[in-house]
Image (spheres, one colour):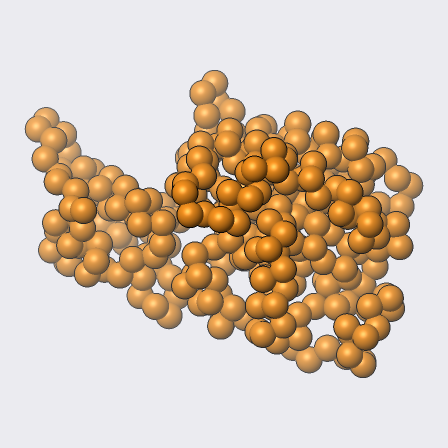
Length: 285
């Protein structure tokens, strides 16, 4: 559906830039330059200049290797500001505190930034031995429950592009799946292994990891969706693997999914018909 750009008394270039943002939001996927220019009824040269300007402000992102554009993290930074100046961290904080009190483990809020994962807030657990989550550091999406909770719910073409660009260094030692009780990292060994773990996350509505990035840490994470329906962040619960066992992780699954669903709703997310996995997450509230 083409978007007419005719608003008397307004700045035409701003009208056109806004039209591009709405077109990308409506598509819920990355778009090629030609598709964008046709959708907003602009010639390619004009659309390209506007896209470069929007990219400079992180409002759109050029998908590496594909020459396609998607909404940038700057859009989320703006949309997370709600009435009264509430931002994402302020909205998420009560959920982090509640989950930490309920599980006695460390909880964290993470977001997707330029095809990497970053934790932006955390609440420490009450146990004497607990996880220490670094804030503001960028990590690959290759391993860990938190990155995978986002990766699993991205549009398929974006997910596959990211997986194709990931490096999978050899894992030292024997087959890690056969030695899951050892205190050694157990990251996905290759792209197919990662895809299998992603399928598990999609089936459960959340991602679980046992010693993937650090051999002694276990974690469970659930995705957060913005008002456009895009997975952009996650809520995580993590603890030492010897204490935060699979059984305790499964006990934490329902309250985690509930918290992630309520936070997504507060950000304007409304599930659409046909979003089976995301509907399943929301239905557990």
